[in-house]
Image (cartoon, rainbow, N blue to C red; front, side, top):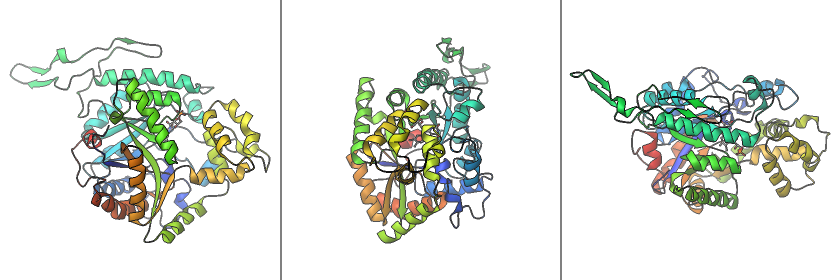
Length: 442
Ligand SMILES: Cc1cc2nc3c(=O)[nH]c(=O)nc-3n(C[C@H](O)[C@H](O)[C@H](O)COP(=O)(O)O)c2cc1C
């Protein structure tokens, strides 16, 4: 949704900023793990110093039990667990610094659109127009069970419901016109009823009368994020989203992804500039390339040996701990296909991976190489980000993700890399406005 070629910057504070990392020296020192707001208030101040656009919390209401048949490993290692509801943290964070926006995640499969529309209207008011919704269809089996489903709703059916969900949510945000509030004391008119509209929506999944019983919020409709990488995911993103997250990791696949989105956007009468992409990247900044590589190695060394299998199990809904030692990816193919979770991306792995690799060997690569890595001096990192940004149409930016220590890495990024990006005119020196939309549009 960017008009300029500015590089937008965000950080992912979902489980990827704590998975395995909590055991590294210095992590979370003097802070209570997840519970108190101080850690997140400090991150907000640091990120706002670098004029970053957004801090983002991913979410799932599930406890991973795909690996080993229960949740013991997830709890023991602290991976994808715990998953607190970070919504209550947002108002506190928003008071720690101005300018910076906040993204939180809510499921289109398990939450009703009326509830979602109401919560985000409230958060938009409280943050002064700095909230974004990451609309996810949810793929955790445990989450499905927590919401009373004996079987997870099938992938494409989840997206079908999501289409209607977003349609209704947007209608609710539009149901009160921006200038409906009159506060005319003389004539005793609080609001203009002609500017408030019922929906009377009756659909396949939802019946919603409306209107939203709330004053229009600063952004009206919050910034909408969608991270689906499949055909139906991209369809949803190009229909409603302002931002997409993507974890593509080669310049070719990034370009192909951008191209596909652009074609779909134009087909729907939208402009490619209406939907920016934030590419996930892990940044390791140091005074020399060798030092940056040493830092990356320390992170890799902190990851326990079974992490790869845990990640694969969580991604594909198959318990990889049950496979015989030495099994190869191809040996698991039919079992993965039967899970109906992510067959498309597994097929891609089969095509692009050395077939002789064992699943253990592959898992290790999978956990560390899943996203782009930019390691080196500030200038080297800026060079790489600039190249990736320009080559993909300078339409979005980057999100610090997977394997970054939340405070350390964000602070180093803000103190060393952002000034270099600003010097090159690639990222902003001041916020363009008070609302997240104003900054993303800039
Ligand atoms: C950067 C990023 C963040 C994501 N965050 C979440 C999240 O917080 N919760 C969730 O259930 N799914 C999350 N997803 C998963 C996507 O919503 C989507 O389910 C996944 O990318 C698979 O896409 P597909 O179903 O369209 O193939 C995220 C994906 C990406 C790339």
